[in-house]
Image 1 (cartoon, rainbow, N blue to C red):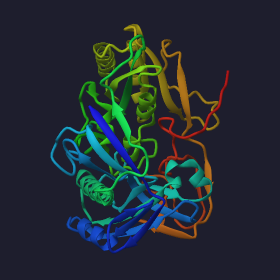
Image 2: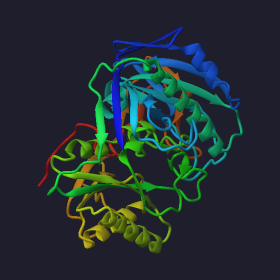
Image 3: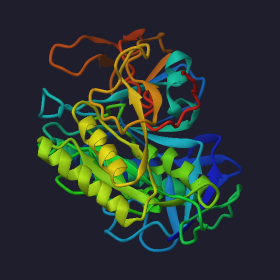
Length: 434
C-alpha cells in the first residue's frame, strides 16, 4: 500500500455560512453541520463552539477526539464501516486538517450505572496546568456538543455519537477538495526494504471487555472481541479503520485522534529503511479472563511475528489491571521465539517510586516508561464552560462527589482529563534514570 497524506494546517476556525479553507483559516457553516447531525432522531440538540489554546475555557462531557480527514483518491473512504461500507483503505491520497480536532461531547446517562462498563466522560482545559498535561489543548478545537434522547443503551449511544463526530470531521476536511496542500505531502509506503536492516513489528495490545456492549476497540467498525492476533497495515490506522468506544472517555485509553496519529507507527515509519524495516502492525486482543487464554494469545502473537519474519517487536498496550499479564506473556513468547522486544507503557505510581508492573517476566529487560497516570492536579476556575455538563462528577460511581464545572477542581489522577495520560509516548517529556 502507498498512501499520500496531504496536510492542511489550521490556525483559526470561524463559524460562518460556508465551508472554505484558505491559508490556515477554516470557515465552517455551523447551521448546515447542526442540521446534518440532527438528522439522527436520537440526537435532540446539537451545539458548536470554537475553543483555542490559552483561552480560559473548560470543555465537559468529552467522549472522543477526531482529526478531520477525507480521501481524495484511492479505494474506500475514511472511517470505513462506520460512515460507509467496509472497503479497504490505506492507499491513494488523503487530506488532513492538522493543528485542529473535533471534540465530541455528549450529555448521556447510560443504563449501566456501576462497574467498569458504566459511561464516562472527560474534561479539557485550554489553559493552565490542565492544558499543560494534555496534547489536545495545543490544538484549535471545534467542540460538538450533543444531547441524546433518554434511555439509549450504551451500544446505541456509542453509534450515535461516533457517526455524528466522524460525519462532522469528514465534512470539515471536504473544504480542502480541489486544493493543493500548503505543506509537503507525506508518503507512507512499506513496499521497499533495505537489506541487512532488522525487521520490526509493532505489537499493539488492545484491552477489550468481552461482557461489555462495545469491546472498546473496533476494526472497520466491528468491535474486537474473542479474536486472536490480527495483522493490519499501518496505513489503515491513518485512514480511520480503527475506532473507539464513544461512551467511555477513559483517558488512559486512546481516542480516534490517537489512532490516526499513532506516535509509534509514525516513529517506525520515520526509521523505515534507515535504522530498520517496518514490517507491520499486530493488533493483539488482551485481557483474556483465564490464564489459558492469556497463554494462547501470547503464543499466537509471537507466531504471527515469526510469520512476518520479525527480528524485533515494539510492544505497547491499552488498558489496565490483569490485561498487563497478557502483555508480559507476549514479551516472553516473542523473546523465546527469537524476537527481541521493547515495552512502551505508562505507570500507575504517583512519583515513580511505586511498583509499575503488576506482573513481570525476566525476558522483559528493555522498558520505556511514558510517565504516570496517577499524578494529582489542581485545576483553577474557568472563565467559560462549554460542552455537555455544568456540573461534573469527579469519580464515576454512584454517590461520587459532584462539583461545579466552572469552579476549581481537584483531581487525584489525570484520567479525567482527555489526553492527560501519555499512553504511547506522544508528548515531549523525557528523563533518564540509571
